[in-house]
Length: 199
Image (cartoon, rainbow, N blue to C red):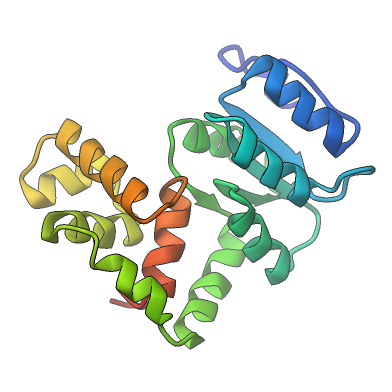
């Protein structure tokens, strides 16, 4: 396997179906779970939902041969931190695992433009907009920069804050908005109308 060739990445388990995947995640508590959408018994999207709901910690990177928008959106709603196509070069897979392990989100380049276009067509959801009112002015600024793809270091530099303070703001806004991770925060920022493509 590609990941086993990388010395600082440890593969702790492989599952043949979605139920087994959830059990292995409960047992081993990995940092990252590579999840195939097409799995027997319990599909990868349902398994991702269970992992997100039942096992705190692991970030799920969904892998699929299918470049379909409905899979992308469903994976993100299920709690996935990233979405990558199986035909991606090996170095992209390794890099994606590292990105997701660091707590950042990742979308395959081929689907990113379509995801942005989809959000551009949606009308802001009033309940989501109302949830934005829970945030302080600073947390809103941080969310806008997260949605723009900025790292914690870049946010700290732009807002003249310490990186630890940025992490605290991100943790608070995730709790207030009832979100799991940065990927869901980006999705929320677009769905709520806080940011728009090209902003």
